[in-house]
Length: 244
Image (cartoon, rainbow, N blue to C red; front, side, top):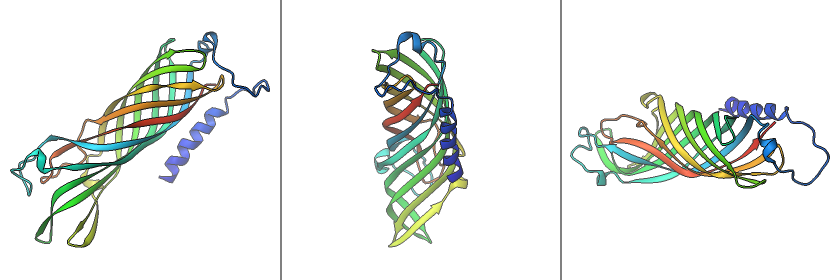
């Protein structure tokens, strides 16, 4: 984990090495249309706090929870996040194509989960925590509103590889935590949409912000006493972009 974060930080610092020295002006320098046309690639880092939850895709008719309905599986969403780095390439004046690397955390709680241990069963609150490495490919639509602001819409599709999956609960007064990484699906696809914009504070640096929705197309884990669940997340993305 530590090496992964250091790699992301080093990647962004390496892109900053391409920056040209300024002319000594202390005030902001905004893009002009002619200058935008000369920039073919930009690099960014971002952090995305999210509210993560799960959707019941279908019910499992076997195991302890057989014969139940969707209402028997209430869940409470939790705090998740995504962070990473991107490289975006200018296709024309309005279209961008980007690639990236990052990590995504999904957390939620099953409120009335029938849990079995040593022959005993009880309804418990089951906390789930999942971490993925994410590799997004995204298409962006950019419109310059004026010299300082641009409106942006991004559609990312990401391939996600599992890092860890854990479940925790309190059963008959006993704290239980299970690492079920080996039982969870190792790969997952996700798709989303981001709507927001960028504020250009100089000819090379911008602050970005979007609202986003992200949906995962595969269930996290396949267990006989669980419904088929697919997670999703809503939140914001805040970042810094560098254009050499």
